[in-house]
Amino acid sequence: MTNDTFDSTCLRHPDTASNLGCSRCGDLICPQCMVQSPVGARCPDCANIGQAPIFRSTPTEFASTIVLSLVAAIGFGVAYAVVVWVLWVLPLGFMIGNVAASFIIALSGAPVGDFVRRVGKNKLDARLRIVAAVTMLLIWMVGFTVGSEMLGVWNGVFLNIVAYIGLGVGIYVAMNRVRP
Image (cartoon, rainbow, N blue to C red):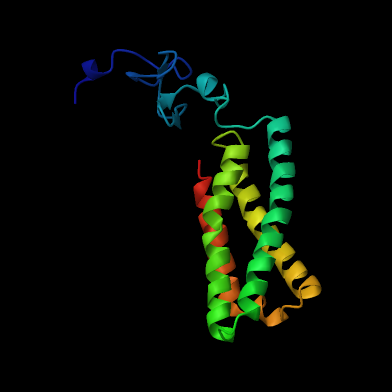
């Protein structure tokens, strides 16, 4: 390797030879001060500019997403309780009704995730994944409360390993529908 390969030096480290430029401003940078970003290597100044508005919800948008998700969780939870009650009163047997109720909560993750994404204005904010997961958990909790306390469904339909697996799958699906 010859010395004529590097004919420039880093602006922050003058004794370090470098031909690498910042992908935003073009300043020469070395591996010591380089910050890797999704669009290439950047200098520390350009890397600290912040995220684009599409990635982060404003506090008002995020608060409205949380409130609308809470309201939706109550509505979806009551609907889930009614469906489980219908499965409970049908002569399907415990196992078939239990598996069907678990499928329902698992499959409801897709529309819940889409709802949270649309209410969040399709932002690529990672916090919306948490909102989707909490919304699914609240749907299950509202469904459990309404189903067992008001509709007379036996608690075992909601509190068994198959129901927990269905809830886990529903949370996973909801979170991935909102994925940034």
